[in-house]
Image 1 (cartoon, helix red, strand yellow):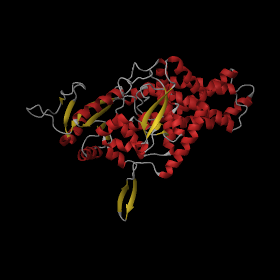
Image 2 (cartoon, one colour):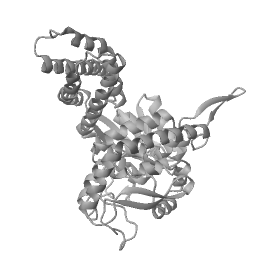
Image 3 (spheres, helix red, strand yellow):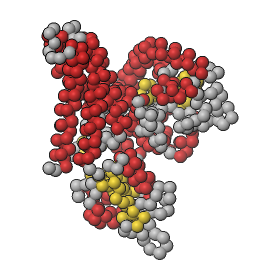
Length: 472
């Protein structure tokens, strides 16, 4: 069976099995409540489920699709399990809403209570098995990495590290020949001048890319952002001609042309690139959503914020809130509010310093608040005041903005939109993701903004909170 057909068959089997597991969870909840056999003697209770099961099934399918259950090559079990927790939680809320909408008053409340626990156990067990099956059946994808030497080595290491052996980099194709003074070191030589990254086989340079591609016959080619436009074109043309999957790490130019609209001037096709900003009419809708969500959030979170404030005050001396000067849209300064998570006066001696993974300045309560991101709750006040948005690039301190703008000139475009509590860089990247990569995500968010994307990022943020290395 061809690889594409196997993958399609496996995904179809996943969907059917997932939906069966979801409904099995409700049936298990009925068994816990009424015992065997089903339906129970009071059949009206079970008929309420039969009336609701189509909508319950559709809501579960939508949630699993949204949390990328069928994206393929989900390498880390931690990411899958975080998605399961989110699906179970939101499915429980959806079930309550569906039952209320259908006026299913005979639907047992105890079943609604037991079902999430049944779903968590059944989905976790089934998905763990499916994860092992997927890794065993899809096999290792062989890849080439094309780019400047240091950049190609870094990308190759990243691909192999994050895929847990599901991607094997056969070698590198670099932008220019590598020489030790006595001649060119290819093919089948290594980059020994990158000791921190380890030795990597060099198969050739861009001029010999077609020969390297024909000789290695990889499953995929990854192209680094630092290559020239001409070199990228040659690589992509060669991959297209040979029907080899190519993946391009975007640079600033490619982000600008992303989401471009095809138009026509007489008989000339043109791409409308547009500005790297959010349209004025969309800003008004975004602001209305910010006001509604931040006001509701402050009201609902008030009891929790009171508990957090008490924990901060009891844990260490100093104020409950921490106020810090940040820059938002067009470089406008404002004071960002957070619950204090460090000792009072943490930067008095050092000046502005980014917090590390095991920063000794962070208090005991602060570590818990940061892990759960509860320290960010007071920023809802900033959103309500119009200084921030719910979704957007994270606001940065003036010291680091000036530093980054001197190193990466494109950083200035990041400030074309209002800063946010969460953003695309936070849900797609990791805590350790480089500022350059986070910048690319922030620019991609601006380039492809829509209210639906904002809602999606807010829901994805819930999953990120459950993953320690993804929260940033």
